[in-house]
Length: 281
Image (cartoon, rainbow, N blue to C red; front, side, top):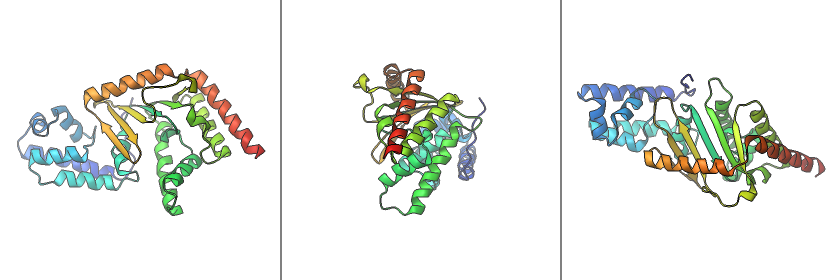
């Protein structure tokens, strides 16, 4: 699969960070392995940073400053680039990584995953999170989410697999008509083979990630990562043992979920129910 290329204007800043890392490493007479040892990372991670296969977190950028004695330069630059993101600070790094992913696996327990959301659905969620925000701010946030969603319809695109709980199909976010539109959109994507999606039925009972969300991302030339999110917080995980544990949890979700074919039928049925309610109220 061709390597994905990010679209936003921040890319020039990240390219500058990568080139400066290589320039300052060479000026210090250090190999990538030596910088990695000083920054408590592997030499391959430094390679990924220099080639933009991965972008450092502010914490890793601070370790690079220590390794290269750059007096906070990389940490300040990294934080500045993340501040320009239209997304919440805790999600900004994950949003950058998803543009480079070759495979993304999402799980949501109560909502439709962001990459599958329609504008009406996203707007209702955004207003619920920011009830006093001005309309212009709401629309900017919605536009950013819809722009993200192009990721799974553009070419090239990552392999995208999502699992949602059946609860997410029945909560009328934005009203019955908006919810019908949302589920019809998901069904269209599934029928067009743009996404693989499974639903965990109510009858499945307890499962391994109840009340949480989880995202797994894989890359051509970098180790996989996991991202978990709670209320106003998120954690990007790249420690191999932790990522392996989250992959196991996702595998158990797949085992508990309906097949894609049965899931599509359930989604279509729920969409019809919301559409019927919208026309009779």
